[in-house]
Image 1 (tube, one colour):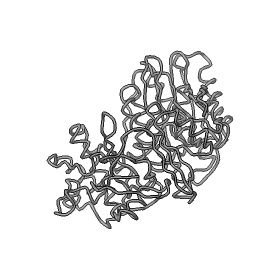
Image 2 (cartoon, rainbow, N blue to C red):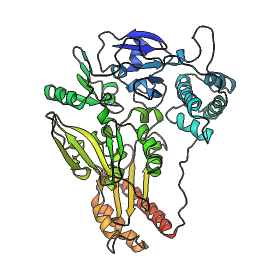
Image 3 (cartoon, rainbow, N blue to C red):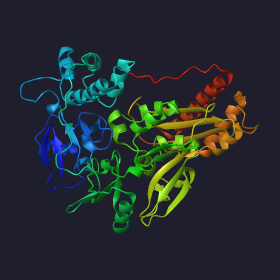
Image 4 (spheres, rainbow, N blue to C red):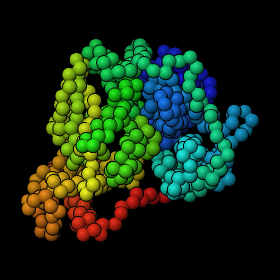
Length: 487
């Protein structure tokens, strides 16, 4: 495999396909400016920019190189902190680097390359789309996945805003497609003891699954790669889904929305900005920009984590999964029947999630997604509550983090909707009875993040918050909820 890094072409040779981009940059390219802080996509010290010139709309985006399989970036190019400013020889600095110097934005310096790359990506986006309406909020979102252990956030934020006001610099380092490399179709990297495939169609994927039913599917790798970086397991056979266009589409129909399993959270933000802004607000908290650029809806569902952020929303939307197998057969399954037990689903060997289908949000619906976590942004859920009221169906409630699987709170819904589907009065007694049903329905597990009792109390608290919001909505007085950043 060939990969262009900072405008220089590198050959990965016969390295194992489960090797990370970070290991490739540091060990093979000798580019040690990109740091490893956590090896789990949490701290952002390993942030780099990827440039994808395939298709009609070339794009540049940030990734956590510590959990990104280098083989997944074929025909794309990468810019690291070493290649950001000028030619790397004459000392020219990128506006973000200049601003970090001017604003004293670096202390120990370990996290600085990651911050610089996140802010440089925002700067590049600003050059293409214009100044964001709220520059400070844009900067905070860009660096939400970058941690500074010296607590130097104020000068870093100032540097980011200052750089946005310097529009005269546009680096094209690493943005040209790799000369001579194929830009479409499937590829295979045989390697001992690993094999890595990138099929170009679902038919090719199905043939690969038929021959290799034990192969692991990877799209973003934001969770799967932790098995390699945290548990030191080999991933002997990987099938990358990123070249399969049918899995990367969002189809907005008049009644339904079909979301391909390999659609990223960033792509969902764009598609749902006008029709489901509450979902977009939740996605902003689901993970950092680096995570949202790689993580996919299919991975979030298929991982079967009880604390995954997407399932509670999808459950109240009555989502259905379209599942296909190695022979090309399809079946539909309600998401509420997909999860069997902790980390167990109805997927059989050779099957994969092809798309997720939800009803298109309608005017007059009320949706709230309340997430409780230790850190406001880019953190694992402690308890997630999803609440949807619709004039036809009444109130729907679903939770994550309250049992071995994400689940609807059916008995709680029955209490609330007993008098019909119109907006309920939600008096204190009704809310108390509904909360009692929550306690009967869910048996949360205590862990390092929260005790079982704490989760029960917080689930009731989130439900009460939702009820207050619904009552305000009914009276026309509900205040608009905004995303609040800390820092």
